[in-house]
Image (cartoon, rainbow, N blue to C red; front, top):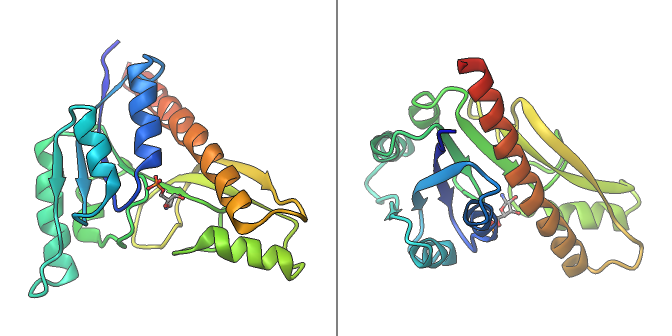
Length: 201
Ligand code: GRF
């Protein structure tokens, strides 16, 4: 079976990137990470990629550039690696159509909340706070396609409910969410690769 080519885009710790690397190394995910792209120099995920022997590319937005120019350049970089899928694993910049339009149906994003809830940054913290205010009884995570500029919006590939316990600190909830994300992201990439193989068979 041909391995799917991935480009993984990150901005920070890269624990989800690590989950993908681990699954590939364990041969439970038929994929190859062609490159890891970061928009910040400080992202620890870049170290993780280097340690795994994966090419890395740091693309910081210049002050004289607008968002569209940056995204167009970013798209050119990602295209060089000819990815079957582009994985946004903690990529913290909102992408414009200059980027998204270059990879139709091939961009996959991970959001640490259920569809339609807590879009944008600090989703886990906002869910924890909403639970304290008795506004929600549980939270969750989702993996979805990115068809347009909607933040954490798009056709849902998979989702999972995550319970919040009354005694949970924010740190407890963050830990539980991240563990579930690592599993769901890898599972979803796997499922999506298999589906795309079937549709091309
Ligand atoms: C994850 O919670 C992801 O859902 C969100 O940013 C976080 C990235 O974590 N978009 P990491 O960099 O993969 O550790």
